[in-house]
Length: 149
Image (cartoon, rainbow, N blue to C red; front, top):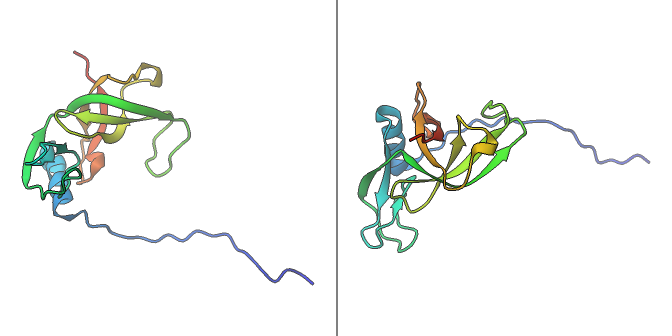
């Protein structure tokens, strides 16, 4: 008797929209319209969150103070992807870095461009390069480039 269990491979595309909320909308609007990076500051512990959050992760206070954050920062960690990523259509190698911007308390994960993998180092200064055509998402920052003094 043959196995009655049949399997079939396939792909289902499920389109969706995700609302980023009031805080995310304000952040992405500033990126899109003014090429500015903003964070939220906690009045209790003075942490600055980029991307901004509505409540402090340390003390859980509601955050209402918005502060501009410099578009330059420091690479805290990085990795190199050597396989193609069909979602973003980037040719490998692609360098992903954790970037600490200005006075931010945490890091922002993003691409590092204008550099070869062997040039990237922890502690390297980088600056945001904004896309020519922006649409209100994190890719309005095209990548972070080495800050050449």
